[in-house]
Image (cartoon, rainbow, N blue to C red; front, side, top):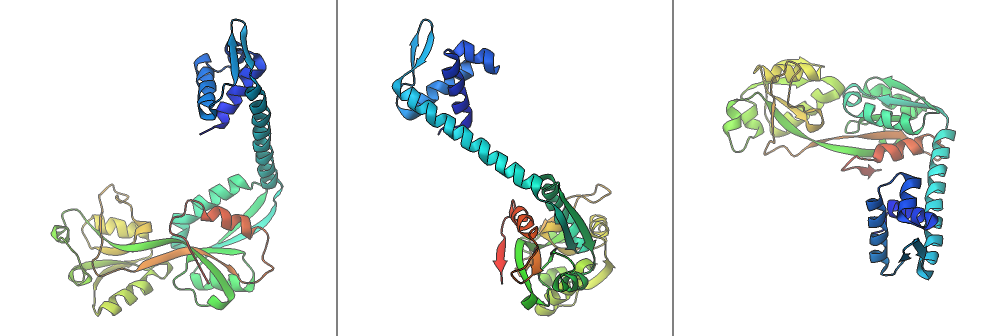
Length: 303
């Protein structure tokens, strides 16, 4: 397969008339230039140069290929220039709404990449509860939300796109008795103290899970802090059922946390984007959506 590096090396040799001259002009090793030319000739199944004592001259096929190689590199440079120009020229204000749990695991990565691509855009962040973020989206007071989509209420007014489906898993301390079982079910978990995260309506999700299973867990602690959940679990003070996106194998104290799948829990948490329906949306939403979709496996558009 042809590469841009091979094309550049070929052009350098063609312009210099020799491998040694091209090496001096480009500060590239002669062996790399020789290999590039040989690979191109093998790929094209045609001789590009005539070798002689005073250097190298292009064959008829070489002259034809040189024109195309220059066109290819010029096209690539034009494309790069267009992209850079588009990024640099884009400006304005973009207001993002985010909920607390999502902000810690998704927002910074997306925001860092967006600011690197579009330095002229001023991004403002509003962090609040899902109900308020949804209210601001519907009213057009913020442009786009990055939040848990499972609890959205005003779906007819919002368009959404799932970026991540995050399955639930059981967090346990090392040497916990449940780790000895081949399969762990919700009924097994209900027999042990449970640490419940209540940030970002997670307690609401938990109540639904336990209600559908017809079980009543023993809640040892409720907290709005994911780090507190980790510390409690790692210290052996309880177990916890959390979405996989929040899992880290260590607590702040450096203690280990295990995670196991539950045999009868197939639910997952949908995390993604929401913006107001309609044709007249702010122009900055489109580039933000495109960038947020990158490196996000399992995304799924929903109506």
